[in-house]
Image: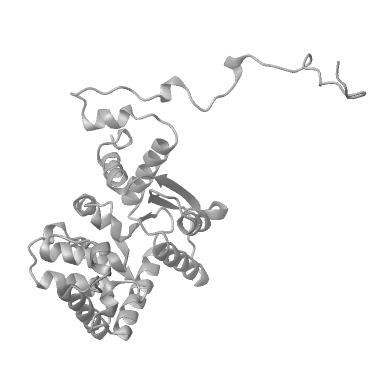
Length: 321
């Protein structure tokens, strides 16, 4: 007997229940993963994945990218330097040839890593080992190439990434086959660069010219905004590996398009990263697609796993049959 006067536990005798089989459920055995064998094809592997959560999202993103390609709408890849450093350029170049990459937007680190890969086949110095000596970021060829390209681009009134692609190709580098800058320039696929002045090693090179860097980066912002305008009615924007710069730039492109009176609806956005940060989730996934303007996705995972998986789904996935 309770010691609380006039207070008894509620009775459960009249609780309403229902047959389990009558209830709609989010997961059924038909959605479960299927074992694979050592003879399974790539398509069979993709079909074996559980049709749940991130796999559903990945399949839907791939389907929306196929739709964009069929409609002739831009599929824009916004990438950070980590995408280059994890060795994904060959995968993206192949997707470029297949029509799944119509434009690339980058931050400054992409230019550095891609140019170094093209020139010498290696990149990404050991910061911990060089910072204490004050030599971090002091590679002569890298700084000179980027800053010379910025000045030439400002002179010719073109964007920074286009100017750098032109300059890298002119060197006839030994590894141009795995350079996104070279591949995009040769294919005439728009490539834009969006700088944070002071954020890249090339900005403290003796040849650095702030006016040229700013002018060419502003040209690239205006170019990307025009590409975003053309996304209306089925375009796709992927943010892969940029937690701050590109999400901020993309949001400004979206607002500029709408400020000028253009519609920007029925778009797809997605953020791929191993940590879901505030700006990509807010400025890429949620805000641009709010109010029925489209649909946004967040895929969590390492780039070196998720980008090849997206490529496999685009090329071999069941939805593509």
